[in-house]
Image (cartoon, rainbow, N blue to C red; front, top):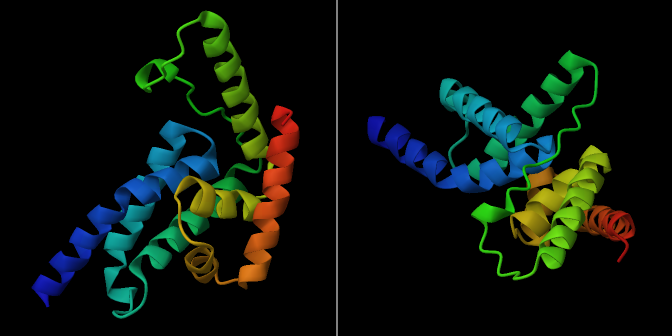
Length: 167
């Protein structure tokens, strides 16, 4: 039994990068996303006995993170619209002139703001498919919705994001 728990813990560690991206997309903030991911991991480890072997561990983790996000949102009774860090110096940005860098920063700020203004259902879909790179089928299964519903959410989200950044 101990080896099984250690195996599950190892799988959880492997999910951390994806879970982190998902949480940052939900919260709109790197620090808040990190807190949410840590909260979800802690909750999962405390409730590991509730996870059913043979079921999707990543779906279970993403669902815990989503539920924790909703719980936090309800507890504060207000929307947390914090822009994601736009520290482009840490990215491999090859823009040589300041104009291109400034334009990229403004576009990123617009995109981050628009992402946070999407309804939660659309933000989840974007986080899983467009940010995390999950297939439509896997994302639909994870969210427990029909694939057509997921496709519709992503389509509406893409249109809203494109309009927000003027594309």
